[in-house]
Length: 97
Image (cartoon, rainbow, N blue to C red):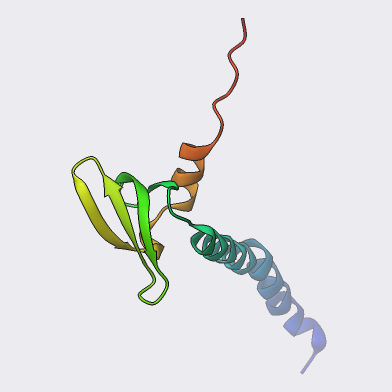
């Protein structure tokens, strides 16, 4: 078997790893860090679009209780959207005069 015949397959795997697998792993790591950094009082948005403030956290069950305008709801930590919650908590841009 010739080494040159395997080269295209090795090259395809390397490209696949750097453009698909590695970024997905990095995103999962960031989301896990975000979920672990949540604390009481943080304003969050769930992936389904529910806005609220964290009322309580349960490390045992891996859940959060979110206080909304109509009451308190329990969600799994993975249901909180990292991107939307970070946009919500980002400082407002300054307006030019």
